[in-house]
Image 1 (cartoon, one colour):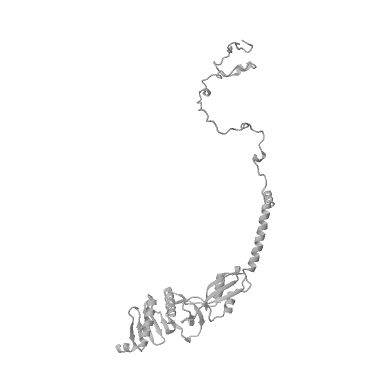
Image 2 (image 1 turned 90 degrees about the vertical axis):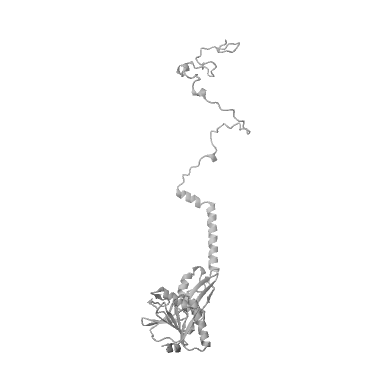
Amino acid sequence: MDQKGWHTGDQTPVSDKPYAEGSPFEEPEQAPELRENRSENLYSREEPFWNRVVDGAEVPRDDVRDANYWNHPDVMDTDRLLQFDNDTKLQKVRKFLGSGTVKKCLLMTAVVVVIAVILYSALFQVRTIQVVGNSTISTQEIIRLSGIRVGQSTMTIDDEAVMRKVEGNSSLRCTLVDVQWDTVIIHVKERVPAAYLKHNGMLLTLDNRGYVLRESLSTSDPAGSLVQVVGLEVRRSELGQQLTLTNRKQLDTYTQILVELKAMKGLDLIRVLDMSSMDSIYLATHDGFSVRLGSEESIHEKLRAFLITREKLLEMSAGPGTIDVTNPARPTFLSEDAAQNTI
C-alpha cells in the first residue's frame, strides 16, 4: 500500500471511511476537520437525488454547437443593452423638430400650400355667369339677385344661399346652382301668375302651386285670364311664400288642378275654381260651361274627360250647360235650356 492508502497490486483503497462501497465521494485528505461538520446522510443512496428517473438517451443534434456556446461574455454588446429614455417632453419635441425627416415634411407641406394657393386663385375663379330658364325677368337682374360676381372664387359660393337670394323675387324659383371650374350656371323657373283670390280685403295673385306673387289693396278683379279661386280656407299669406291653409288637402288639390290644366293647355279656358266643398268641386269656363268634378280623386282623368267633352259640344254647337265628369268614364251634359224646361 502506498502513501495514499492504495494497494500497489490491485489498486483497492484501504480506508476506514464511513461512506458506502463504490461511492463517488472521497474523503478530502487535505481537510479532515470537515468530516465533523458533514451530514451523516451525505452518502446515503436513499435520498430523492438517487431515486430520480433517468431520461432516455438524448437525440443527437444535426448541427454542431459552437465551441464557445456555453461561454458567457462578461460584457454584452452595447447594441443589445436596454436603452432607457430619460428625456423630458420638451427635449423630445426639440429632438423631433430638429430631425431631418421633419424638415423635409415641412418643406413639402409648404410647397403643397403654395401650389394650392396658385390653383385656388387661378383655376377656381368665376369668369362666366349664365342664367337658364328665364323669359320675362332679365339675366342681369337674376345675377344681381344671386350676389355672384366675376372674379369671385368658386370655392366661396354657397349654393343654398344663392338660391334663397334669387327667390327673393317672388316670381322666381331657383332649381339649381351649377358651379364649375370658372363658370356658374343658375337654373331658374319663373312663377307665372295663374290665379287670384280675395282674402282679408286684399287681392292675392298666385301661381299654379299656391305661391303669393303679388298683394294688392284693389278689390276689383284683375284683367287677363287669371282663374278666380273661391273657397280656400287661408290661414296665412306672405309675399313670396306658399299659402298656408287650414286644410292641407285643399292646397294639394288646388295645385294638382292648375298644374294638370296647364299641362293640357286648358288653363286659359277656366274662369272660376270653386273649392267651397271638397266633395263637389266646380269649374266655370269663359265660354259658359260649368264643370262638376266631384271629389279630389282622379283629377287627371276628370279634367281630360272635361276637355274632350267640351270639344265635342263645341262641334255640336251646344249652348251653355253643365258638364258632369264625376265619373270620367261616362261624362254627361245638361244644357241650360233643358234645365229650364225641367224646372
